[in-house]
Image (cartoon, rainbow, N blue to C red; front, side):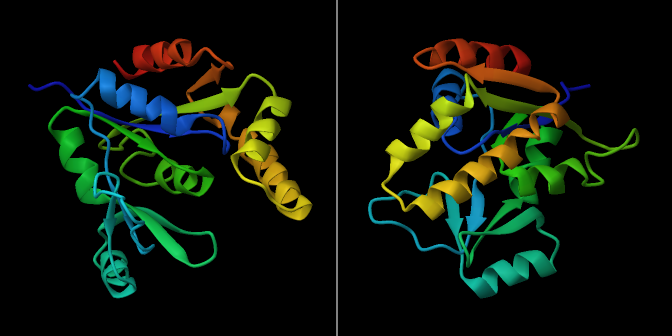
Length: 193
C-alpha cells in the first residue's frame, strides 16, 4: 500500500507571514503539493499562472454547479476564490502532502466537509495556525503594508481579533517570531513530514 497523503491547512491573521512561510516550504520541499485556486479576479500585470486558475464568472458558476470546488468565498466585495477538488483529492490519493493556505471561511468549509470530517472521513486533515509574537507586531505590519484610513485599520484589527480565535480550533499553533522565520518554517516542516 502506498503512503497515505493528507491535506494540511495553514491559517492565520493577515500580516502574520503565511505567504513567506509557504514560499520557504516550496523552496525546501518540491515534493509537497501546493494547489492552485480558481479565481474570478483579473490577472495582474506580470502575474504568472502558478497560484491561480483565472476564470470568468460563468466558469466559476459552472465549477460550483458541478461540485468541483471543496469550498469557495467572495473576497473583497465581488471577486470569488475557490479550492478545486482536482487540485486536492487526486494528490492525497497519490500519497502526497497537500499544503493549502486558507482564510477562516475556507477553514470552516473544509474542516466541516464530509471528505475530512468525522471518523469515517476518507481523507486526513491537519491544521496549523500561524500566530504572531504579539498583537502589536501584527497591527504594525498591517499599518506598514499600505497606507489606509483609520476605519479600514479598525476593520482589519477587528478581523484579526476574530481570526485569532481560530488558533485553538487548529491541531497545531506555530509562532512566527520577528526575524526568526527559519524557526517557524522548521516547526511547520516537522508537522508536515
